[in-house]
Length: 196
Image (cartoon, rainbow, N blue to C red; front, side):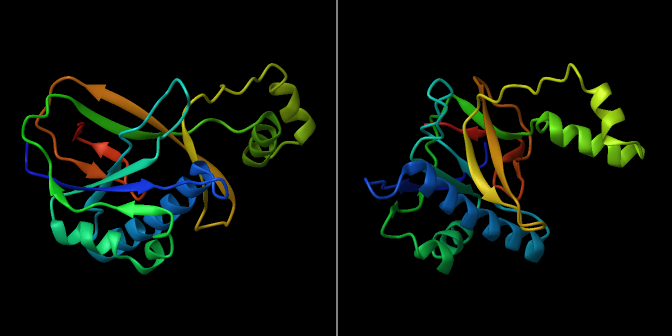
């Protein structure tokens, strides 16, 4: 595997600021930075992992691990002026090279669930040019999937609405030679990341 650099951002929650609130705020800043990188470079060269991810307690944990092939890219993210506003609430660790003896790998993917019944009815009616009543008849037995994955709450840059970014962790015991590609949330689209 190509040598990667990593840097941990540890969330320092206290009684005034919950770790979920802090995670959402930091992830919002990171998302904006990743969008900026994608616009400037045509791709995002920094990705994220959640070493404390726990599907049983439905938590992303309190550490955001940044990965990149370039030390400079990690420095530009961790020194971002918007992220520095949270330095009282996060500990930014030194940049290090990933250990060579990793034997487990992971990827983090965004999972999108269908909206609630009312949203689906309005959407269907609009797309098929029928009344909401007619659409509701088609959705009588609709039951949305129950979302039991960790998430952060973000604001959409395109329409300003708040939404939940659900994150699924997929573990791998061996590494396949695939390029690592990150999306604008820093999540893994292709390839895997070492876990340690």
